Length: 372
Image (tube, rainbow, N blue to C red; front, side, top):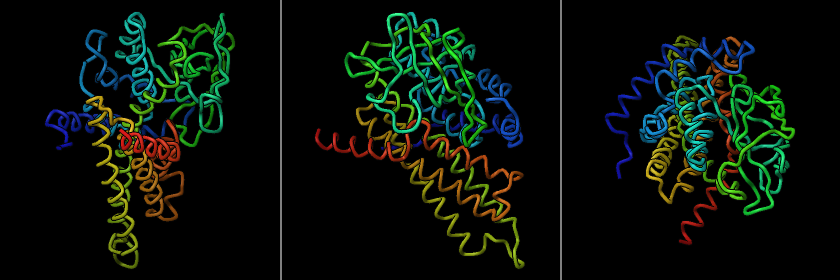
């Protein structure tokens, strides 16, 4: 089976890489890191103009109706550039949630706005420390509104609406609710994470107006399916990041001289670079599997998503750490750009479940596939 991308995807990759090289240089990432903004608003506008937010949205809802193969290419290039934009929250999560479970009316209202960037969406699952579970959900919907607390919510301050996972007494114990965030019943407060080039927030709901998204008591199953789909896209971001960190380490090692020779010629540095390359290549192979399963809506998606996610977490974190080490003492300083990859790798490693969570999902999916 050939998992390689076709000519159209490779042309898109070339276009995306050129665009991000011009509009998202390290200086743009550093500006967000140094400032108070949650994301680079000008870069976000340009990404919207490129049509990336509309990639997989059906044409009937104002999208481009392209495949997920195009979207994973964009995801990889955004990861390579460490782009400080709310793309993952709005596209991988909110858009996917609406396409999966939204009513016709909800799709007609929100998908065109997501496609044009008029609206930014996010997904609110976690309620603090620990692995989210259906038993731990404290956010609830009563007859009059939604009440509870979600922490942390990626791009929670930038988003116009959130798909909120709330506890339920019906079905699988959870339901989804679509909540517009600009209302009196919602308060938002910024949360500082390791990577503050991406904004996060605490969302407090106090009898907030909300509408059911999908079936009552069908929210936990929908959450697991959504995370499988998003995991593949996040994994491609991580692969792009890992490759960029490796290349930065290689270029520095070839240009940095010690004792009259480039440090890239020393065996210790060669081993670092070789190990990065091996992990990145293995992760990319797993991501091809995930992209195929996502694009074909294969029954193997849970297995493919977990495989891609675990490999990508390992590769991204390892490459980011070894990049810092290759730069030596200067790699730890604020002035060097190594921190961009390190911060983002750590964030991406936990944003839709930690490595341990996805290892558990991988084992479960493997057992289910064997049982079948």
